[in-house]
Length: 76
Image (cartoon, rainbow, N blue to C red; front, side, top):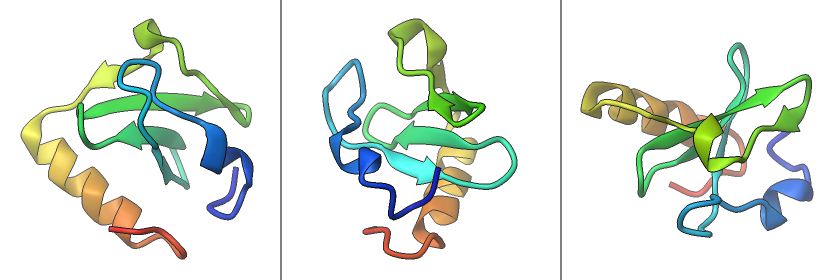
């Protein structure tokens, strides 16, 4: 999955229905900074069941926000 993938415009968090940020690279995932939940992308397929998401601690949240901000074409 790439940051300019049109699919990213329509994917939403299964819990709050808000937009997700792509965390590309090793351990590719979609991230919801509002709920601090990370959803894995396995073989290019987003795993967006509520049970697939994991809560991240505060330190990890800050690191993931920085990682998402480094991505081209991503709003802060």
